[in-house]
Every structure is written in structure tokens, then in C-alpha cells.
Length: 181
Image 1: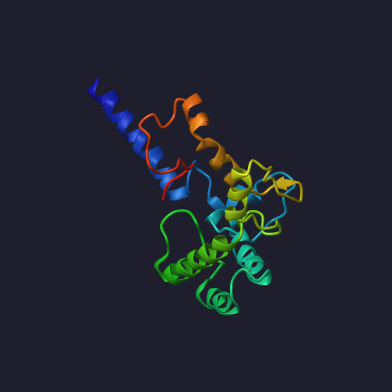
Image 2 (image 1 turned 30 degrees about the horizontal axis):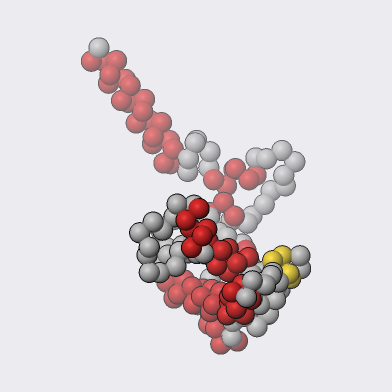
């Protein structure tokens, strides 16, 4: 029994060492792309965790006036997108880049829906006034009700709706919201 246990431990160690040396599952990471049927030999580093969309996203934000020229220039100066990665541990040499990207995302998302930059703006104060007057507040932009979030929040905070849903039974002084900060 003792010898069988030793062989088992050795087998597990050999497999684990092979995974570490080869990059996982016995295949070098470079071969994963090159071994696909009909795939030409390629030299890009996509499988190294590099996210190719990142520079395009910030180029889009800048070209549509959502971030300033200064911030866009800073991103170009501080970011090496050939080795940029969202996954794993962050590269120390890229810390300033991460800060720049976070700042630009925050600036852009404070003013517009980052996932719908071409939509019209929904002004919460106007929506709330229309809802209080029992008017329809729906504002359509490219076939999407851009005020739905405010309408839903208003509706779910109505006392009769909360009573019907057995919600807010302790009569909290603040409104319900779909997420908290």
C-alpha cells in the first residue's frame, strides 16, 4: 500500500510539473492558436491575455467628445496596449495607465450611458415631474425607452406597490434603489 501511494504522489507531481512548464493542459500557449485546423501561423499575442478592444474603446470615447484631448494624450503616453491586460495581476509599469483609463471611464459614464452613447438624454427631474402628474414619461430614442430606469424606480417606490409586494414593511425613510454604492 505504501509503494502505491508513493507512485500516486509521483504521478500527480509529474502531471502538475508538466502543466506548469507547458503553460497548462500539456500544450504551450503559442500552439493553441497555431494548431487550429485551417488556421495560418499567426504572431499576435492574444492568448497572453491582451485585450485588443481597449485602445479602440478609448479612441471612441475621445473621438466622440466624451473625454478631453488632454486625457486622450495622457492615455497614449502612459499605456502600452501591446501588453495591457484586464486579467491577472496588474503590471506595475502600467499603474498610471490603469488610473488614466479609470478616470476616463468615470468621466464618460458620469454624463452619458456608456453603453448607449448615441441615445438622447433622460433628465430625471423631468421624468419624476411627469410621473407625479400621472403622465406617461416614456422617452424613446432609437427604439429604446431611455427613462425606464427612472420609471421603474419611481413605480417601485409607490406606497401601494410596496404594500402589494410586501416590501418596505418597516417604513424606511429612504427610497428603494436597484443597487447601492
